[in-house]
Image (tube, rainbow over all chains, first blue to last red; front, side):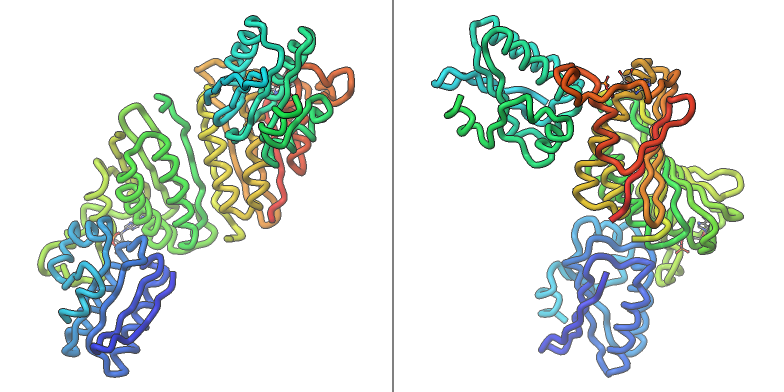
Length: 111
Length: 111
Length: 138
Length: 138
Ligand SMILES: Nc1ncnc2c1ncn2[C@@H]1O[C@H](COP(=O)(O)OP(=O)(O)O)[C@@H](O)[C@H]1O
Ligand SMILES: Nc1ncnc2c1ncn2[C@@H]1O[C@H](COP(=O)(O)OP(=O)(O)O)[C@@H](O)[C@H]1O
């Protein structure tokens, strides 16, 4: 239940979600992205390659962060979702709201 | 929960216990050994290398089979017990009743 | 699988950090009781985690003096998971669809919707403090 | 681990083929609740399997109309596993030691002895149809 943060040379902040993104830790992610925004970053990629589970609160946190970045002229993208996690975005129609890359590399290349 | 049976060239019937030896299948083991006895076999080795669990009924079945073989001039030996299974024999003092080999090979060589 | 399975009941403290353990326990039991692996791993897990979070947050309002009761009943064709909190309940009919365009960018309100999408039937008691989720077995 | 853990209760049908599943479930829960791996894998498993077999065979006499109730209570220092059948009970004080030389070659009578060896405390209710096994946590 922790987040890793790295800056890709292409100018994208990549945040990895280790384990879960749920009601218990979504504030931590919000804080990490807000800090990046305050530091002038505008391109954020959330990497779910090592994520087992996202609950509805986690989905909600991504929605509000995406809006926040968009309002600042930036963008939040997602990558690395497994079949189960992708299904969650499809069921809630959030797949229409986000740019979702298959892999982190692909998402970074097209950012 | 099944038993494998093979005849070792050294004249020992080796019965492998796959999974468990418990109240639900001890009769099957008893039957297998009794059949071997009826067919003239006198040396039986029960191999626990692939056994996860023995319950008190299983221990009891081994005790009664051992007695049966001894009464017929034969012997029942045991081998391949892991630490947990060996503890069961020690707690019930049945380690004093059985010849217990570390490995099947060792038990066969000394039979 | 035994036709007449083990029935399990959990008394869960009002604490979000035990949700995962409770979900694990129930998911394993349901898998052993004949739920398909995908449904046990995904549909049941997500639905139960959402129901538990709601029971803890909205039902028991994080009051550590209260508990949440979970009960799993297995019949030959169905698996039924009951989650009951000690709160005042609510009217699920008043919860709006979170997928309509006007609501798509709302932060909250997707829990119940996901539950309904992922299980075969959802029922509530009259007071609205107990949800019952039904899944068909393999 | 949460100080105040999840409390689980199982209603087990009177059938020997569900013993393993029930033991699995309880062992996993106890491991998650802070019992040492060796105690969860070995001491608890063996003791609970013996208690369940006795409840099913001697207590409920294999009557499929009866059930066995298992309850696990976790406190900061202890894990308590209750197993209650719907039989007439028995007097555990009358069960002889199976390790004395005269009894060593008996086929039966090692179940209760193993339970006593493997858990930290054993108690029965007055009627003798409910056993309570206490294990110390890590
Ligand atoms: N067990 C409950 N007790 C009381 N109110 C509940 C309960 N479950 C859900 N609710 C109400 O239903 C609303 C919608 O819940 P849900 O769809 O899970 O979304 P969210 O949890 O994101 O608000 C909650 O905001 C709450 O008001
Ligand atoms: N739940 C129970 N209800 C009634 N009698 C029991 C129960 N548990 C044990 N007993 C009695 O205690 C005796 C000893 O049990 P145990 O030590 O487990 O050995 P075994 O099961 O091999 O007989 C049993 O034979 C039975 O008469």
